[in-house]
Length: 349
Image 1 (cartoon, rainbow, N blue to C red):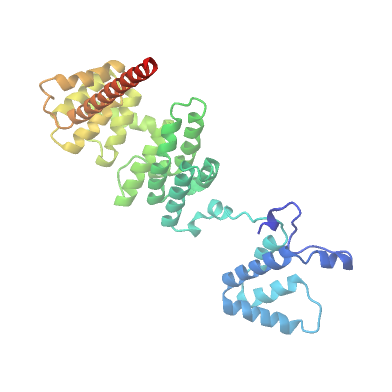
Image 2 (cartoon, rainbow, N blue to C red; image 1 turned 180 degrees about the vertical axis):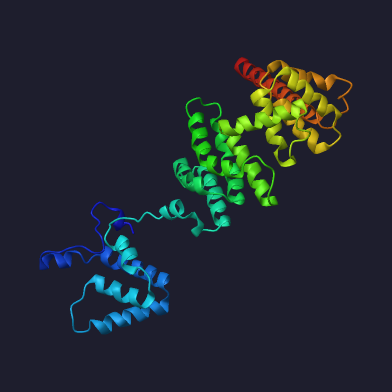
């Protein structure tokens, strides 16, 4: 279809005003593109109905003149499909057709597994620099109507790399947040903050509210802070398990004070559940106060937490990594000094 991409291309059906023009329009567009469009039409209608329509057309107009509209009418009569309405868009316009409108207007044509795969593929290809990120972002436009968990779960993981790369860019990151904040807002408002429904609905709620909070949507951040304050004050005895990580992280990030942080830290030390301690630790580390973060680091030296299997490992891993990097640095320095000495010896020789 290279010819159809040229400015000199033309629709399959064109008006002619003289016999000389008739010959000029019978080219690769008329034959190659025309045959491809007919094969597509046959696949849409079904082979038997398509051939029945062709027979009817030939029988009705034998020994007569006929127009394209007559052919469409014969096919529509046997198939009861809007043949003319569909085919006019293919035969009366030049160039490549726009096919992505289907996903924007009726994404349910593709099942949820396909939609999630499209998201995964396009962002993976963009990251590999095979396609432009503009194409990936264009594909996300329909998400404003998306409400399936497996799609949003894939979106969450697919945009994580882009989010991390843009997070320190003061010009681009706010635009990125607004784009996905607007896309996720309808479904986040629909699922709400009440932990109810099937397991899939609960997972959807956790996923979309997480994206919404990451994108800075005020309504969801305020709700996370409200639930967090109720939990800190004791008005709420326990945060629903599927919402705890969100409430702990964004509640502390939005409304964390030294008093609230200390209460949370005491609950961290008194908890005996591994998963709960992990979530509380995320919340403690989400505070914006530098002094409190330093206090969290200093807490590793305290007797009450020195044997804690949940707080210590990250710092131990970081210490090992720093030591390895330092060792690598010393090795590189020794190698550099040796090379310089070797060059001096060669010059003296």
